[in-house]
Amino acid sequence: MKIGVVSDTHGHIENLQRAIKALEGMGAQVICHLGDDYDDLKAVQIPKGMELIQVPGVFSTYYRDPEIPNRVVREWEGKRFLLTHTRGRHENDLPSDPDPQELASHHEVDVVLYGHSHIPDLKEEGGVLWINPGHLKDENKKGYPPTFALISLEGKDLQVKVFELYSSKELLSYP
Image (cartoon, rainbow, N blue to C red; front, side, top):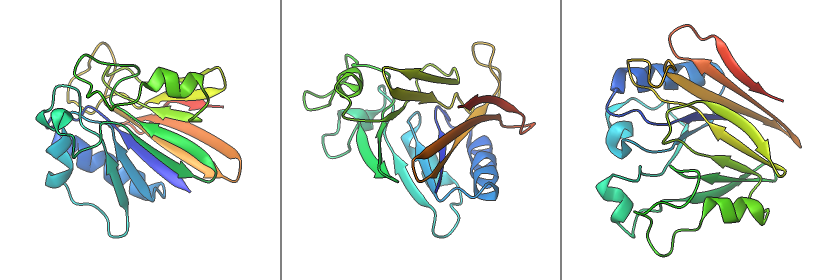
């Protein structure tokens, strides 16, 4: 199974569409959008049969809507994934929102997908893999070009690659 991960599109629809097309070409069956902006997925063409899962960014009006989950846990190939915009609690969290750090420290999840910082990162901490796909804005943000991630799951094996949007150059990989 292959999972595409994007975050922090901030209205850069053309870049989001380009990332989705690249991920489709890489065999992604699922796209996870980690917020900012929640409505961006409505403006792009999604390949038929591709599943979409998204969470809102912390400053989005959707983040305060109890009908829209701010954090989502999904299981694929026996691994539990948390989708969240932030790495930890945020002042805009709803009372019912779980703390990503607590879920990770109690090993209630195996992988945390997060955004917010606009900085691509792959890091294993305490047996939990933390993945930030970066951002999809036009300009370099904090010194980083637009990026997205691809997760490949095969049985118990998990591989992650973060790619530059325009060059398709691999920036980070795990393991």
